[in-house]
Every structure is written in C-alpha cells, then in structure tokens.
Length: 381
Ligand SMILES: NC(=O)c1ccc[n+]([C@@H]2O[C@H](COP(=O)([O-])OP(=O)(O)OC[C@H]3O[C@@H](n4cnc5c(N)ncnc54)[C@H](O)[C@@H]3O)[C@@H](O)[C@H]2O)c1
Image (cartoon, rainbow, N blue to C red; front, side):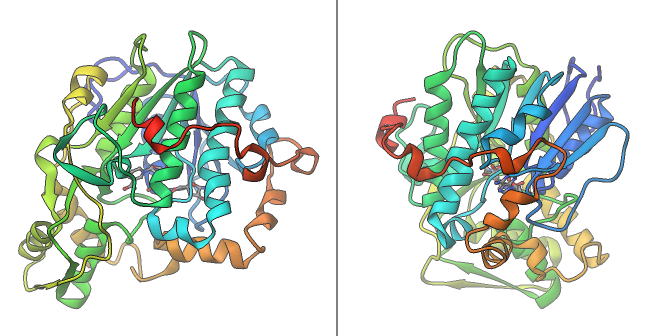
C-alpha cells in the first residue's frame, strides 16, 4: 500500500500479482517498474519487438509470448489478480504496413487475452485504447460518449477491441478501457516516434522543429501519468455500466504548432518550421474529468515536464542514437515482417508459457463476421 508515490497514485493500491502484456514497450517498461516499486509481482509478457528487456528481478517473470496464439496465456494467469493489456502494433504508420498483422494483434490479441482471463477467472482487465478513436474531432472537447470518427486502421482496431470487451463484460469479468492521450516523456524502452519526443530530440540534435500542418489539436499525457492511471484502474472499484475513461491532462490539449513552439522555447536555439500539409489529419480535443472522478487519478506532470525530461535525456545521450530503429515502431514492425513473412516466425518463439506449437493461432480470417460491430456501432458506447 502506498500514499502519493512516484507515479502519483494516491490512496491504497492493492499489491498482488499482475500480468502485463506489451510489458517490454514504452508504457509497459515503466508500468512494470512502478508495480514492482509498489510491492507487486509482475508477469511481463511481450513479443519482444524492440531489444529492450526488463531488468532481472525476483518480482518480475519475463516471458516472450505472442498473443496471437490463444494458448500462450493460460500458463501465465494462475494466481494473477489483474491484467493490463498493452500489447499491440502501435501507431498509424506501423499498423498500415501489414493490415492483417495489425488486426490479428490488436483485435484478435485482445479477444485472446479476454478469453484467457475469463477461463482463468481473472475479473479485472485494463485495456489501453487510444484517444485516436475520436479521429476527426467534432469541434468541441470529446468525452467518452462523443461520436467516434477513427481516421486510421490503428484506431479502428482499438475501437473493435473496445467493443468486444464491452459486449462480453459481466459480473465475473470487468474490463476497464482507458483511452490514452498521446504520451510523452522518458521511459525504459523509449519511443522517439511520438510527437513530443520526436520534436524534442529533433530540436536538441538538429536545432530545428518541423511541424506538419500544425493546426491539428491533440491531447497529451505524460508516461508516468499513463502508468498512474493504469494502476488506479487496476484497483478501482468496478462500476455497473461500461467503464471507459479518457486519460490525459485537461490543460494539455494543444495544437501541434503550439507544441513545436513550446519545444523550441524549452530546448532553446531551435527554429520552428511549419510545413503547410499535415501528414496526420487527426484533430481532437478531449475532456478528462472522468479520470479524476471515476478513477480517482489526477495527472502530476505537464507537457513542459515531459519536454524537459526528454531534452535532458537526449543531451545526456541516455538513449544513444535517437534515430535508431529501436525507438521507432514503424521500423520495428517492418523488421518483424521482414524477419518472417508477416511475423509468423515469432509465433514459435514463445518461451515459458506453454507449448506454442500445440496452439492453433486464431487469425482474422477465423473471426471475420463473428463480431459484426462496426466503428459506428462501437461509437454508441
Ligand atoms: N504511446 C502512446 O502515445 C499511446 C497512446 C494511446 C494508446 N496507447 C496504447 O498503449 C499501449 C502501449 O503503447 P506503447 O506506446 O507502450 O507501445 P509500444 O509499441 O512501445 O509497446 C507495445 C508492445 O507490444 C508488443 N507486442 C506487439 N505485438 C505483440 C504480440 N503479438 N504479442 C505480445 N506482445 C506484442 C511489442 O513488442 C511492444 O513491446 C498500446 O496498446 C497503445 O495502443 C499508447
């Protein structure tokens, strides 16, 4: 039990044993660290897209697992009191590389995780969805019941996964969906393909910040606050209706040009160039009150804190070459596909979690038509 700890989680946080999928990722690496600091033990499962791995610790069981294989989770769940499902092909560009891989991972992977939880009697599943689901916003600040206009395959896969979780929730299985804003800040497994982190490293290393378009609105969330919200959701008392929360900081809805100017001001000596055509047409502002009222969590870091943190990390050379493929999901996903057609080689690299060979990986083709909901159906939640 911890009061006002490093990740800003106030009040009691149940210590226990948790399964984190996508645990070797940007958010997962920090989440595992924080859960262990809180006294929990963690089963950290991941396909291992990047080369980052958790430090050896008696409280962490690290497992290379591919969630596209429905059998791989069963051996990981006994004794687990909650699951955080982060594993995904993350980002619009990465998801476009191979659509079937993206659906299999983001949608079917979520179906597999939810089914395994229900088989094992695990009641709480926290699912990392995205504010990207709001897509082309409607002008006002979007709330969880606002219409959803996903503009990318990535957002579509997240929406479908949300919809599946909502349709199977019951007294015995209580998923909590967190629509995370765009995350920033330093983490163990770093990402320099995210707006703020990318602009900041560019400002430090090249003395310039290039913004495409710049008028688009985007909400932001520090990675420590993403972790804090997730831990709060793990221990929050489930409510009777659907549990969907936007996670972000109320005052950190910004237009991208404004973010570029803030980065340049904080880094210093950087020139901002606004290019006329946006590469990314998403534009949405989001309301976050329900995060504090529903989850009891309030953000403790501002956008400027994340920029300073990333600036210092880049100046210190903490991550080496920021342009490395290790920090870029598009390049990592390409590497996965090139390593095995569409990544199938990794299905057999599952270790420590049962016999992957014996599993019959479910593919999108197996379930097309099973879940007939489309994005606008899901928008009603
Ligand atoms: N970072 C953000 O700005 C942001 C914003 C909104 C939502 N999210 C969501 O939060 C979650 C974590 O994001 P992140 O930024 O840490 O991304 P990340 O890419 O760093 O982490 C995702 C992890 O999932 C793993 N993975 C991919 N396919 C897998 C499979 N088949 N089986 C097991 N593991 C697999 C990867 O190896 C990777 O370590 C994702 O679900 C993402 O959609 C992130």
